[in-house]
Image (tube, rainbow, N blue to C red; front, side, top):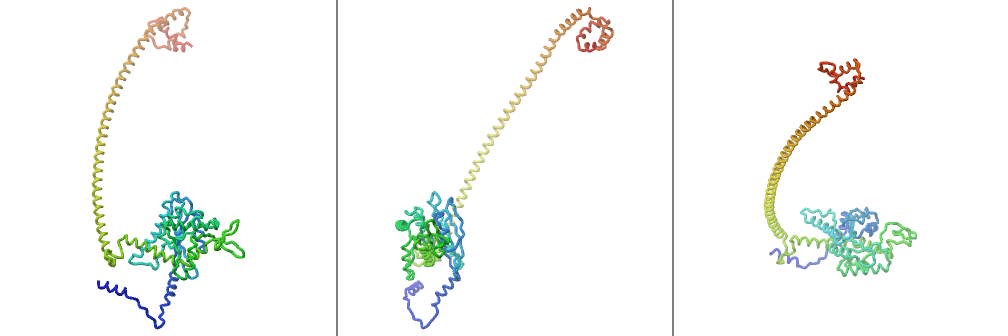
Length: 481
């Protein structure tokens, strides 16, 4: 407490001005800072927000008098994504690490409600990266590549009517995170009178909707006059082109039309020169400073307050980082222990639930197995019964078949005996009628006798009578030829 009181006394003590007796040399500090800055180089990050095809890439090429790598984006992107590209530029002996971030697909979707979210997330991510670097024990901010956005050039379509809802919502979400300079792209597509009315309409809508754009600083006497006059020209109406067109006796950057030439660096044609003066030649360092002292500090303060850090405790006493750290550590450990216990209890409950589910499924499977087993036995029994029935039917069929064959054989035998008798009787009558006209030679009788089977007859007459039936047979006929 005594130490704190002494510090307050020394802090509140009035500063005394002393006169130097001679030259000391600290008046060279600005020169030292200039030399150090030139050695380190500078970085500048530009965010270009606007619809596809509105002229963002062309304006960047015109601003820095070079041609950057560019890939044409289509109008059929599923969402908005940011494409940062970093370039090393040098002018005289000053090195500049320039990062240009393009919003690819912005405004191309049917539902544009959340088109601003990827942009806000990207800006916050860069702030978070810088904050994490600051909070490290071993920091390297000296050679850290600062990717925080220093300026947002918001491209407005030259409709001549009013701002779109997407423009108002996006700028409202961004004004607390980045310096915004609204510009009217492709300003050569509307007349001067329409352009003047359009500028007034835009500024009126921005004010009525509470959108805070970047105002060029007027607190420095060296730039007060020019910045004050430039603030009255916002938003800037620009035209971009890297084509050289001959106007009079000199080549100038311009856009050639059938009706004439629009000169990019002619202030009576567009505000490109004003934008370049304000953005690069006059206020670049102020934009970098505003990004660090205003937007980043706001993000840092909100983040640290979320983490529980404050400048003063509830008793309005000076803030102790160590005490806050210990308190947050205890709070974190207790919260971790509580969550661990909840997880353990949740795990036990989950295991019990899983066990119960597995037992229930096991019981269901067992019941299903028993049911299938009973069904299998029943099917087997039915198949056995069908097999026995089929065997009995086959046996009965075979018996019927044998009986039918026997009956058929008996019937045929009974029919053949009367037929044979009738045939024999007929043959004998025919033989008797033709006996008188038949004269057989001995050779033909011998042939007939040789062709028939041996006969057990006592005389030739009996043999002739027995062989009358052979006269009509094929054997006898063949022998008689």
